[in-house]
Structure formats: C-alpha cells, structure tokens
Amino acid sequence: MTIDEVKVEIRNKMNEMQEALDSDDLSKAEAIKAEIAEYKEMIKQLEAELAEVEDKEEDSETEVQAEEKSEEVESETRDEDDTIAELEAKIKELEAELEKKKAEESAEENKNIEEEKGERNMTEVVERVTVLDNKEEVRSDFQNYIKNNELRDLTTESGAVIVPEYLAKEVQDFTDELQALDKHVTVESVTTKSGSKPVYNGDAASPLVSVAELEENPKLAVQPLTDVKFDIETFRAYLPISREAIEDGIGAETLVKKILAESVVATRNAHILAVLNTFDTKEVTTLDGLKDIINVDLKTRHQKHFVMSQTVYNAIDKMKDNNGQYLLQNSISAASGKQVFGLEVVVFEDALIGQNTAYVGNLAEAVVIFDRSQYSAQWTSYMHHAECLMVAIRHDVKELNKDAVRKINFTVPVEETPEG
Image (cartoon, rainbow, N blue to C red; front, side):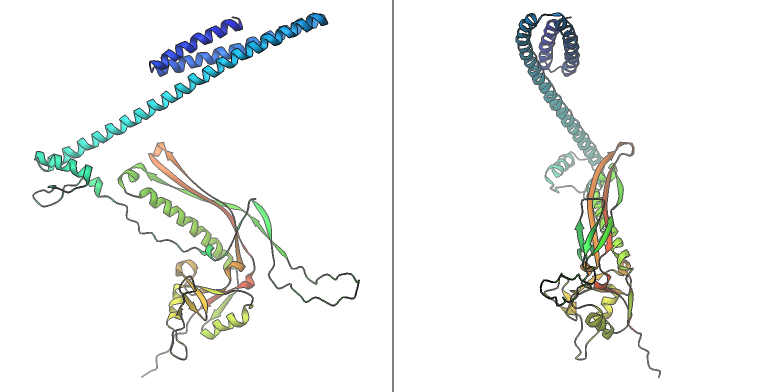
C-alpha cells in the first residue's frame, strides 16, 4: 500500500469509530482505535522507505535537477504535513470522546452496583424486622427510621427497640495522646542524608587582648565552633485493617491513623531520651540540692525549666517552704501552668522518663533532632481484604551541649517513725 492509500484507510476507520461512538458501542470503538494505531505505524515505515529511495536518487541527479526536485518535494511535504496534522487532530478528538464515554460508563456501573447493594441491604433489614414482629406497619416504620432517623412505633412486646445489630457497633478508643519531648528540644530540618551543624556552647569565649597599632591581629586561644555530625536513619511500620473492621466499626480507620501518629511521637521520645540518658546523673534528696544545681552547677546564661516524672512532681507538690507555703505554684506565664523556684514545670509519665527522674536546664540547647522527612501511605491489600496504613520517619538525634541540662535522680528520704 502507498501512503495515500493508508490515509484513505485511516479516514474510513475514523468514520467507523465515530459511528461506533454514536451508537455507544465502546468495545468496537476501542478495537478500531487499535487498527488506526497500526495504520499510523505503517505510514511511518513507508515514509522511512521513501526517504531512503529519495536519498539514492539525489546522488545521481545533476545540481539543476536536484534544485527543481527540492522545490517540488518541499511543496509536497508541506501539503502532506498539513494532511497528517489534520488526521492526528481528528484522531485525538475521537480518542478523547472514547475515554469520556468509558468514564461515564464506569461511573454508571458503579452507581448501579451501589444502588443494587443498597436495595439488597434494605430488603435484608426489612425481612429481619418482619421476622421480629409480624406487622405490616413495622415494615414502613422501620423504613422511615432508616431514612429520617425517627424512632416511631419500633418496639417489640418486650419494649426493646428494633435496631439492626450493625447500627449499634462502635470502636472503643482507650488511647491517650502521648506527650512529645520534641516540643522542648531543637528541631533542625535537613535536606540531605548526612552532614553537620556548627555549634557554639559558650565555653570558648575569651577576653580580647591589647594590641599595639598596626600589629597583626592575634588569634583566639580556642576554636569557638564545633561540628555536630548527623546521619539520617529511616524508621517505619504499617498496620492492616480488615475491610470488615472498616465496614462494621465506626471510626476504625481513624483510630489506626491515631495509633500510627502516636508511634511517631513514641519513636522520637525514645531517641531523645537515649541521648539525655548519656548525661551524668546527679543524686538529689533535698530541695537545697535542687537549688545548688540551678544556682551554681548550671551556667546562668542557660534558660531553665524542669522536666520531671509524675513521682518527682508528686513529691515536690507536697513540699512546703519555711512559711508553710507549697513550693509548687500556679503560673499564668508557664505553658504547663505550674512552676517551682520560678521555673516552669513539665510533667511526663514515670514509664516514659523514669520514676525518680527529672531534668533541669534548657533541653533545646542540649539536644537536636535533624529532621529529614515524614511520610504516610495507604493501600488496599486485595489478597487479605484489608486496608494497610503506613508511616515512615527519617531523622537523627544528637547531643548539642550536655552542660545545658542536668539529669537528676530525685528521692525523698523516708522519715522514720519515732518508737513508742
């Protein structure tokens, strides 16, 4: 076949495809679309063969003949390009119309499936009600309940309301939001897997020295900046939820997302504590011991607050000063609402940070999280009839300056009961 003959065939097929679309015969239209694609490939092959022949002819022509032929070829090429462009545009229109009709057909099928499912469920529900109470009015009353949520004459002889079991199920959520330690440390967003952050801990500053005129500037005795290196790791997990749990339990999917979110907080808490637990521990048994750490051990330049366990909080909450005033005071300036010695108090569970553990100082100057990314995904596991939810976080947690915080093991001596 020649190129012109193939174009004629394409036009014929385009007319057939339009007729199939007009009659909503999408399967036939799809088959004709494939045939048109084959003809388009045939044109490309014929054009390649023609170009090869023309190249050979040009080698044997004189300069004048070649010039005249070149003008003729250019004119024919323009006409041919216009024809091909016209065909391509029409083919795209037909393909777009086909895709639109396929989408409409798919939407209509899904709608019919949902309507059939709804009708089937309603039939099953009404049949169940009819078994419970053989009265025609119960049938219509329950249909009204389903549509308008009105309880009207829906009782048996025992006084119980007739409600299908699936409407009464709920997921019981006994989880609590975990407190996040990352609210109190430095979070540094990074865009690479590894690197370093320059840190100045304040210990390296020294006084300037006197220098004579035009003398060379002296170098400070120590280097004030140190690099904290990081290497990002990935931490991830997923939870499957059966389709039955999603369909039968109200809020099952939301609950699993909440559990995964708490897993992220728990992971960060564990990694922050792993760094804090490398700090030296101070044994403290009295309030004066706490004051020594705050007033002397920690540098005055560090902003300070308390992070303490429930047990330590409870012990301090019972203590009074020499005037009989409780040491733990309410504070409108502190985010937690409590302060001791003028410092904000943040309380964490014993199970998280340790029963007798407290930290005092500035956690933001002591620990840094190099935060790379957080990713969540959801997919359908057809083989298990389930939805799978996943979360992944990428970070590294490092020590910034251990002198900014003191870890405390706070125990109150047990008072001995006098004999007799």
